Length: 331
Ligand SMILES: N[C@@H](CC(=O)c1ccccc1NC=O)C(=O)O
Image 1 (spheres, rainbow, N blue to C red):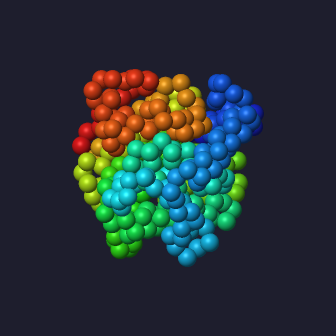
Image 2 (image 1 turned 30 degrees about the vertical axis):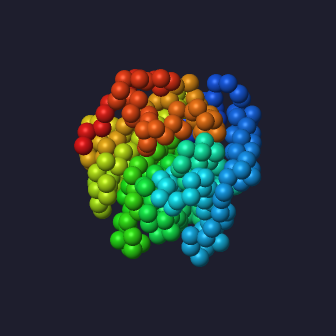
Image 3 (image 1 turned 90 degrees about the vertical axis):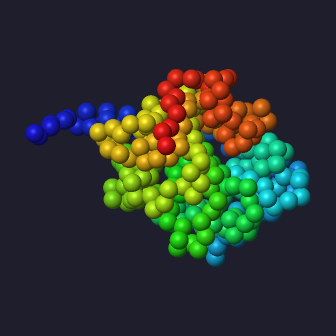
């Protein structure tokens, strides 16, 4: 069947896709520009505060590349057997940096969790393949440097959630060590990159459809070389209520309890991951992260660690979450 569509229909469709993948167009409290400005201000302030008040090691090289750097922030307790939260910042693989992304450092280190904020080479310097490799190498570095860690929890936001999710597929054998991964916290992420190819996001990324698919966790879950080292490694997929419908779809389809015709047998649940899905009530794509600077933010409650969100759902105390659409992942 040949489908004929007019030029104006094409421009309407591409315009809609562009809007769906522009998170600042969906905010409800501040305007787009003010939201982006506030996000970067809050990130910078949180980072200055963390560096001024927490014991830290900054710009630690995890590889030979100039951009292979992490910041490590430590709890007060003298030990190396902390749990580690490794945070991968967002910014559509083309902006953002570790130097304005220490949102959760003070609340988490105060509760005994070491926080690692990862730098990677954003576009145009870095390609998607290189960024994925950098996040893998930074995680391996943390494991090698802190072999007594009480678990590494990978957390990413938006494009950073994509990079963190790619670690579900990583074959660690070539890295010589399998990180002690105990959980994934994927916040407002993108797991199928194909729709991005035809948006302006792709201008500095130069992704081909093939490259987009190669770097889409949604398309490769069946190829995950190993099941999680710890069968209790939970994967929490979270999206903000005021994220766009496309962002909601991305999270839901990645998690989904049952395979869809679009992604047959390609969801976290159907591949055997202990996954949960949650829509966080009344927050947008940016507030969901900047709220992590607050000690009382739901995602910062570490008792019971790792994810009180999961525990709260299981105990029926939904608190500030929207209870809709949650299904416990099958295992
Ligand atoms: N240009 C985008 C900004 C954006 O998407 C973004 C900004 C900061 C952190 C994460 C982002 N999104 C995905 O990585 C917008 O206007 O919404």
